[in-house]
Image (cartoon, rainbow, N blue to C red; front, side, top):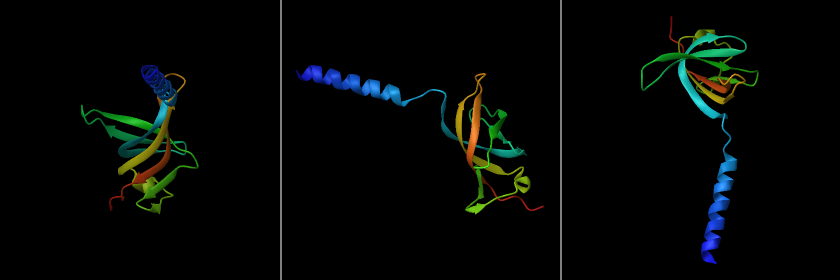
Length: 114
């Protein structure tokens, strides 16, 4: 009787674990240099650590996206173009298979004095 309980428990754990994951969406952090700002999105220049390749990642923003420099809220992103940005994002697979990022919060480095 004990071996059948073990099999039942293993089966239960395996099926429960399979139901938890849902491919195609999740959350992550995108770290890079802020390059472009529009009302609908920001573009971060991201360097791949393994290859050194640089790519531009478009991150959608909404009215609910929070922007901060440290603990201070930021309302104008123009002075921050060219500085480091850390975007907390939710992502999902888009209709044509591309990854679509939506920022929940963007943390910015202090802009350089000009």
